[in-house]
Picture (tube, rainbow over the protein chains, first blue to last red):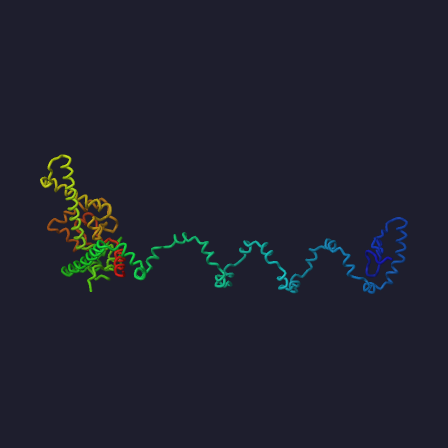
Length: 248
Length: 170
C-alpha cells in the first residue's frame, strides 16, 4: 500500500518524481514505458485518493515516536544552516527565559577556569574598584602567614632598615636595668682601672666647668653665643657648655 | 650618701665640646710623666746595651747636653706620632680629650707636627700662651691657634654610662 509521497503539498498534490512503498523503498518514475504507465496511473488515481484522505485522522493514527526514532537527527542537523537560524533568534528574549542558577549548577567551573587567560582578564579589571569591594580582613584571616614569611627575603629587608634609628628608639636604661645585661656588662668591663678612668674623665669635665664659671665671674664675661664645640662636632643649636649648669 | 664621681648623662652630651683647662692640664701632666718614664727606661736600656757591647762604663748623666737633646727628640716623637696617627697622645687618651682641626675634622699629620713643635711657645712669658684655654671663646691655646687645631672631649661616654648603670644595678 502506498502511504505517501516524498513531497506533497497541503492540498495533496503528488510529486511527479517519487513515491514511497510500505517497505520504505522509493520507486523511481523514470522514463520508459513502465514509468510512463505508472505516472499516468498515479496522476489519475493518487490525486483523488489523497484528496479523499482525512489527514488529521491519519496523524492521530501515526506513532510519532516510531517516526522520530527513524529520523537521522545528525543528517538533519547537517542540512540546517545554523548561522541563519541564530540570526533569527532573539538572544535577549532567550536569556530572559534561561534559569541562570540552574545553568550555573550544570557548569564545570574548573574546566571553565582552565580555559580562561588570566592575563587578559586582569588587563580588563579595574583594581581600585575591585579592592573597594574586598573585605581585606576576611582575606587576611585566610592567609597562611608562615608561608608568606617563608617567601620573604629577610636579609633584603634588614639591609633597608636604618638600624641606628631603631637603636636610638631603644630605651637602653630600661634594657640594662630590667635584664641581666647590666650584670654582664658589669662583669665584662668593670674593673678598678676603668672605674678610675671614668671617674677621672668625669671629674675633669666637672672641674672644667667649675673653672670656666669662675673665670666668667672674675672677668665678667658674657659667653652667650659662643660655640660649644667645632661646627662639625657640635650642631649650632644651644646646648650646655662646660661652664653652664650640666643637665645630669 | 656617697658623692657621685661620675655624671654619665652630662658626659654623654659633652662629647665634641671644647675641653677645659683642668682636663688639658691633666693630660699634659700624664704625658710628661709617661714621656719621662719611657725616656728613663730607654736611656737605661741604651746604657746597658752600650756597656755590654763596648765594655766601657757609659753614664748618660755625664753627657747632659746630649741627653737633653735626646729627650727633646724623644718628647717630639712621643707626642707627634700618636697625635698625627690618632689625634691624641697617651695622656690625652686617658683623660678623654683629642686634638682636631678647628672645624672638628680629624687632625692632619702636618698640623700635629706643627702643634707639637709650637707647644713650647705657649710656655713663654710665664705661660701666657695657655691663657687662651681659659679666655678664648674656643678654648684654644697659642699652639692650637698656630696649628689650626682645637681640643675636644672625645671618649666613649656611652660605654662609660652603661658601665655606670651596670654597676649601679648589679
